[in-house]
Image (cartoon, rainbow over all chains, first blue to last red; front, side):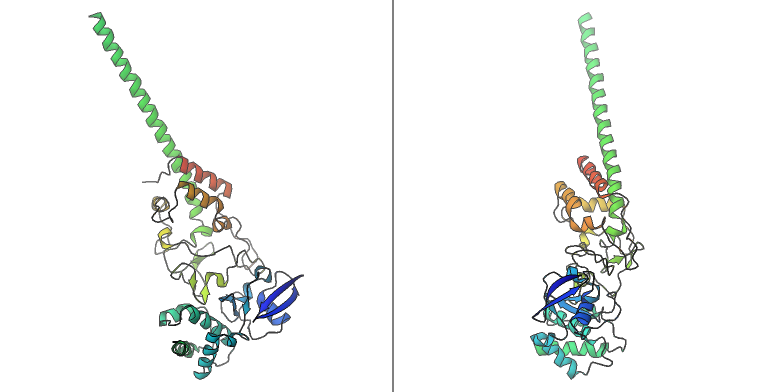
Length: 154
Length: 200
């Protein structure tokens, strides 16, 4: 076990965990922040996506020992970000969610896309969101919400 | 008459000696080139190992595994070889191997530029000659001269990663290139010392 000091959604946190523990389980089990979801555990589905220093990152495959000083933003904190707030509004407006399980990861990836590219093309959306799976197949509404958020951000 | 004959004999002797010296130099030159080409083939055997060539693709995606399959999760090259926003290489690949989760890592994980592709668009390795010419072309290799190439092979973290590739998700070790890193560097040096010859 080792002690780590984290910055999660702007707040300092301290955890004592095995260095090999994936960030996802630190968030969910140690910090009880269950908005970030466990899907596949091998970085295939994108449900566990968080931002590390603004980079969308699959938290299920990042051992806490490799986190360093990077700032963590999760779905619980993304609404405090101007782009994140707009994306969440668009998600509600377009009624994107069906079962909702993958949506925190979808929103985190969408925010990363729109922060880097406020006016994404269909191809840009397809490329950036292609690693986030939705078993309800809400892909059409996800795309519409990203396009809607892009217009709101213009 | 005798003096003329002696002069003629002297000239003939000079010609024989000089031709012999030229042949010797030719032989040494051919031998050096041959040794250099042999060293290059060793270098090439490493460059085309899965640990290296999987990120030197000609396509818009990296590869994975010893069978060099298409990288899962729809990972794509992106404009600068490091993926796209929301799905960058570093979205999963950290600064070091993640042994507990089986994801390989190294500083600045990314794809090699298309100018340094070592495969064709059907994912088949390019010939030794083509790769050699790419590697020695400073308009393609990032402007590296001989010393730069040697330094790259000796010190670049992503090159060094090939000999410390970590464990796969099933817990088994990833395979290594055919040469040790020391042998790879020695072969690179020998090839460079021979003038970086490329197969025809």
